Amino acid sequence: MREARQPGRSRGFRAVVPTTAWAGLVGEGVRTRHRARQRLLRQGDPGGWTLLCLSGRLAVRYAEPDGREIMLAVRGPGDVVGEFSERDGRPRSATVAAIEPGITVRLPERRFGELVRRFGIDTQLNGYILGKLRESAAHAWRMAHHPTATRLADLLETLVAAAGPDHPAPHRISLSQQELAEALGLARSAVTPVLAEWKARGLIRVGRGRLEIVDLAGISGTDVSSSGQNRP
Image (cartoon, rainbow, N blue to C red; front, side, top):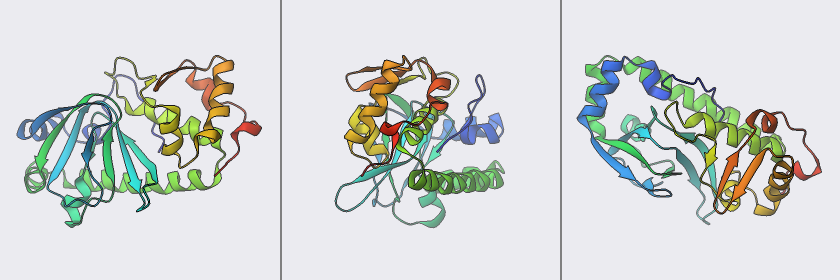
């Protein structure tokens, strides 16, 4: 799930295509504002739309039939979501929900495909999709083998990176402790001691339904204590 952050530069699909191509895609779609926690795409639904993210971070989540969810990825400005259904015509493989208020552009899947071919960016799109698949493999390994503190630090670093260069407060995360735990497939009791330790060390500030990162480098380099071990 981790992605390097390059301040002042575009990211995601926008970073690998010509500026004119990205502008052309955006100009052909319908801009839609979304609120925090709003579901933009639902797992299992048929395709129909591809979304371009202009602002705000998005959570990509997979759910089991019993309702348990896990966060597969975080997307942000410059990213494309929902393009898998455009490629294979199958139902949505995951749910995409807004972490915070933002703006997306909706394009009919067929129109998105037509524009990709017109702008000659099919190779870039294939590379972008393959990058997502490679990212998911590394994410699966970390989820299975890394302790809780490391997984939580990785998630926070990913959230900051996904904010993009124009975000007014990339270190402010609008997720509760319960939501952070669910994102990692854990019980809240597994992440609470880690967050409490980081708060005591001045690395984070915790509020109602949100968290603010004070020292990202400190979190990323923190030692794993007994509170950071994996728990069901």
